[in-house]
Image 1 (cartoon, rainbow, N blue to C red):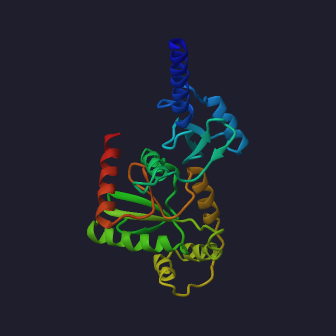
Image 2 (cartoon, rainbow, N blue to C red):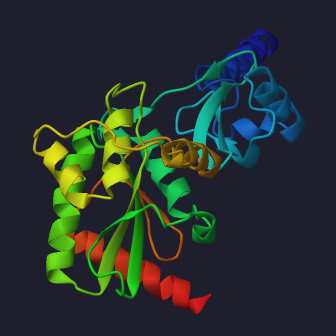
Image 3 (cartoon, helix red, strand yellow):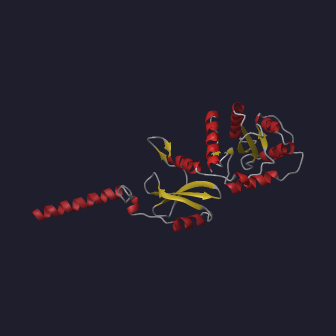
Length: 268
């Protein structure tokens, strides 16, 4: 009887342990004890999704159990995706921490992009529109689209920046996102032909601007350049140290970011 009781207790313990392991995704608290992923496996996945030249930045457990998080740099554009433990499925999109209402994917991407740098010497500025004093010590390069509503809001903000700080100037590179804004290309061309900041601002104010008065390949070069730098959206600002800001910030925060970037650049 005693032997039977001990046998039942042993089986019960094993079942309990088995239940704990499998209820938590097969590995209890540390999934790396059971699951691994190699750079060769990730490269194989990247090849299958037509990104064979992407640089693998980091591989780690995702905030959600059962997934690997893979961070990459693809031609200057940083991003991340998830791979399940079976390595049969690639998952893109956001992981949301429900109780805290935090987008963990966005959080990780922000951290990735904080480290991102663009070589500003690769960006020609002869065709750029200048907002502010061209002799200003702090130069910020902006890729923008005349039909992008976010760019209009951003432009209002940078005008406030130069009102506060005469040592900051913005060099505006026109980058029409033609798939989103079909008229942006000819409008950008017209603005470049006239080299007119006023036309650019008139368009944001919904005023009619004239058709292009010249032929130029500047826009095609800008589009090609943006792709090579990993810039896919507007507005995108490149700060004095080459760090990248996508979207807008309140004026004081933006000025603080520019000053910090200037200091970092001076230390190099």
